[in-house]
Amino acid sequence: MKINVVKRVLNANDLVAQDNRKKFKQAQVLAVNFISSPGSGKTTLLEKTIQKLLPDEKSIALVGDLQTTRDAERLAPGALQATQINTGMSCHLYANQVADALKTLPLAKADYLFIENVGNMVCPGEFDLGENLKVVLLSIPEGDDKVAKYPTIFRAADLVLITKIDLMGALSFDLKRIQDDLAKLNANVPLIQLSSLKGDGMVPWIQWLKAQRRKGIGAQAKFVTEE
Ligand code: MG
Ligand code: ZN
Image (cartoon, rainbow, N blue to C red; front, side):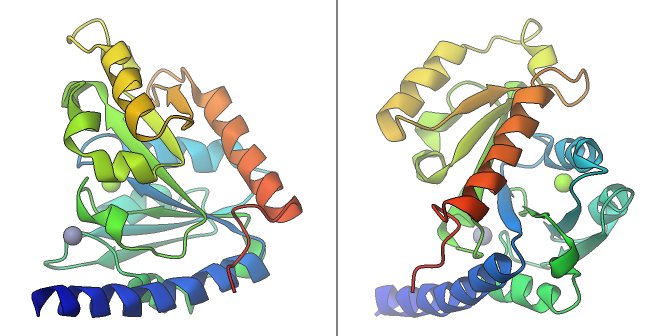
């Protein structure tokens, strides 16, 4: 009985997600869902990313948090629009919250839609928002055991970003352990180490992002809406 209820909710979410994906494709926007635990540096990375893509490429930011408009305010400079979704009690975004936001977003003018999910490594991975790609962040202070502990999200990741690498020497963090655990779950997933603060890794990150957008629009690989 319980299983049926859960399944119905997921299916309804998937239908809305499919519709979102069509809208992204029509607008030729690359939609990226950023997932991580709180405090791993999603907002800081997005602040820098939005600025680095300018002036050629323009971004919209959609931010999910239980409360406050703080992150949207931080992302507003440089973004075509930054919209905050307050989820209240919910620890993840639903596709219909993105669909509602899309009604007021200038999607046709944008190249990227960056969706910062609620800080949580568990359920955001289970709710498709219609995004083209999932980027999972893991910061050095969180520890090198998290890939093995949260396999679902790392299995679904299109890219893993190891953030705050400027803290690498100060804390014990075994990158090899992360790589070994990823090899078991998601063997071909690319991994980029970066520090938003110091700028390390920003070049490969921006290159990856731009390449995904080109690929999406050209070859219609992951970008394509399954119909
Ligand atoms: Mg944030
Ligand atoms: Zn949740």
